[in-house]
Length: 245
Image (cartoon, rainbow, N blue to C red; front, top):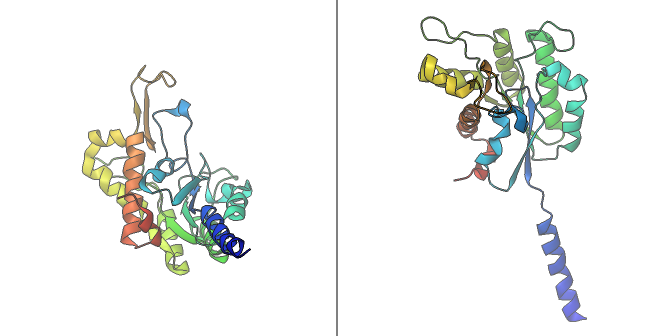
């Protein structure tokens, strides 16, 4: 009986240790972050490859979807799915803006009203459940000016995102600035490697030539995910303790 009494606590401890839940990083955003199916090779979203930067103590749960805005992601019930799964100590990376300026009613938001309200909703509700929000600006589109600099295609949505980050006091990663710097540094021709430039008949599932200055190649996805991790380090976000050495 004495041996049994000693064994039971050890068993319970071992059992509790084995069911420890990894920290989750939930990702919400648009196509530039989303997971892409095999038929889309060589296209990747930067959220699709983020898990490679972390060890097994972290699970990246990517809910970003093509074409979504901060509004449609809520209206379609996708945010409800995320918040129902969120637990204390989990992270939510938020990146919207690409589609919020679209004119259709399903997606359009006003930068300084509904867009800010939606971002604030994500942040407040994440905090209420004990989660940790990380707000990001949209990645840059590859549209060059004649002088080799990039055009600003997000305008007030960048300003509004920065305002929300300041007002809600959350971790903030300026992905637009980081990606812009990299793309401009690489230049007009070399930066095509980051985006979805496909020659005809190279990929069997995508045989047509493609010149896409918004969506990312696998190389671009890894490059931009690395910039996000750089931002995490700059902000000293606790999740960096789980980075792969």
